[in-house]
Amino acid sequence: MFYWILKLIVVGPILKSIFRPWAVGLENIPESGGVILASNHLSFIDSVFLPLLTKRRVSFLAKSDYFTRKGLKGWLTKNFMLGTGQLPIDRSGGKASEASLNTGLAVLARGDMLGIYPEGTRSPDGNLYRGRTGVARMILEGKVPVVPVVMVGTEEIMPIGKRLPKVRRLGIIVGEPIDFSRFAGMEGDRFILRSITDQIMYELHALGRQHYVDVYASTVKEKRATLSR
Image (cartoon, rainbow, N blue to C red; front, side):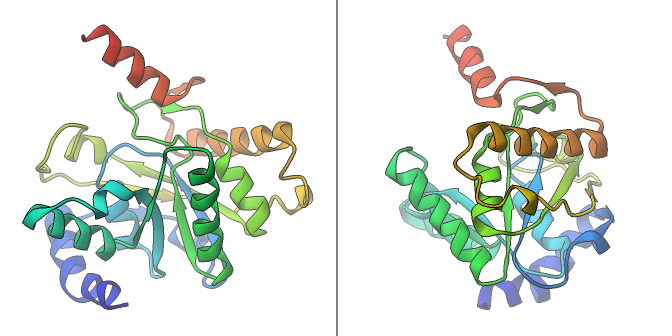
């Protein structure tokens, strides 16, 4: 709670005055109850400005290494992540994936908002990539609606590999909530999970008009890394 108050009183006004972010459709976010914000992912700062422009607190699931780094830089990173509502998770797969799911479900069970990037990683080139079905499973098991959110221009402010942001305007477009309750109890059906995920990605494409590529962003990154060796 201390970090949330700090964001509202200190960090928020400073960042808003510098970057002058704009937002469309914030009224589509439910005022109460558990809900998932499913967003495209262009830059590290997506997790900064999305919570900044919403009235309700947003929690994100972030790599645990951000919270365990040593020294002053590590301490600053950890407190920054906590200040922006991010929760440490292990992304190594297997049992760690189940633990991540449970962490997200606990946020939703409290009636809070959970931010998820269905692509699983930042876009390497500004395109919108195939979504991973973990978001669909979270929706069905949490029994919550999902609100599609599009970040606009954040990749120009802080591209992958850059440590300092450029001062430019950015925007957020929020779509209408999507109710998948008709699929209740079907979280074990991989075809249903894929269908739900694809619909979410379609909504993100319709809102932001990003070019859609039907492969995983992580696959593209791996291929590029291999070619650059």
